[in-house]
Image (cartoon, rainbow, N blue to C red; front, side, top):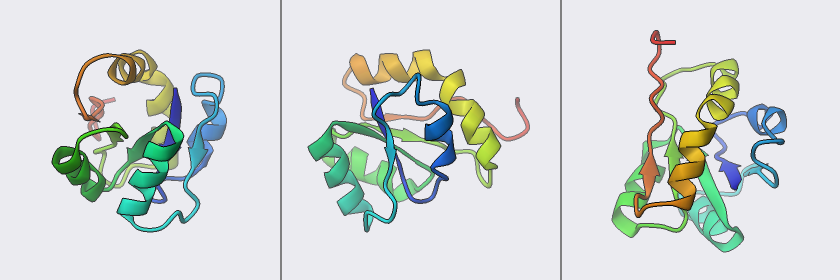
Length: 112
């Protein structure tokens, strides 16, 4: 289960969750949303993003790649660092099963 963090997220959460998500990476300025999605598709990644445009692409074009949409507003890097391990079972099930193209983890600011 490889995650590809979009450029709107820090690469730090992937470093800290590498035991759960081996082979994961950060896009490091891969380009526009289309380029990020194409890179994810070509390399077997599930994309993690805060960008609503990536989610729109998943609705319009389907998967692969699947999308984990972090809808937590102006959340801190620490909140995303906590979110990836805390939702591991949910993310694993989303990636391995079902036809859904987008997962929105149940993380709302202020509801920790």
